[in-house]
Image (cartoon, rainbow, N blue to C red; front, top):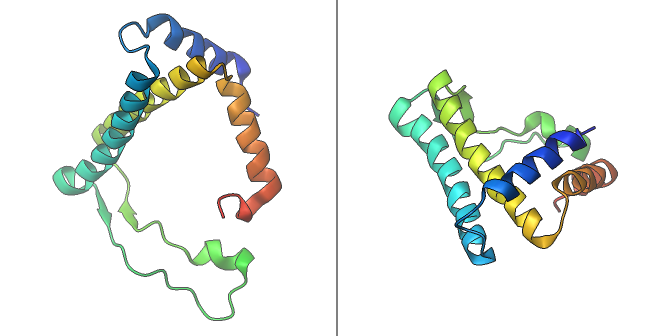
Length: 132
C-alpha cells in the first residue's frame, strides 16, 4: 500500500522546516495558494507552452451504457502530454501543495499516512460511489 516511512519522514521534515507560517490561518491560505498554483501551471502548459490542449465538450455517453461502463466513455478533455519542462513545474507545484497538506496534518495531529490509508479504504469500499 503506502510507505509509512516516506509519509512520516516527509511530515517530520515539514514540521521541522515550517518556521514562519505556523498559524493555521497561514497554512490554510498557503495551501489554497499552492492549489491555485497547480491550476496555473496546468493552464500555462496549455496557453503558453501549448504542449497540452483542452478539448472540452459535453461528455458523449452512448445510450444503454451501464454505470460500470461509463468510465470507458468519459473524457479528461486533455489532448497530449505535458512536456518535460511543464511536468517539472506541475510536479514542483504539486509538491508545494503536499507540503502544506502535511503541515495541516501536523497542526491537527493527523498522520498523513493514516489519512491516505483511510481514503484508500474508502475508495476501495465505496468504489464509484466514493465522491457521490
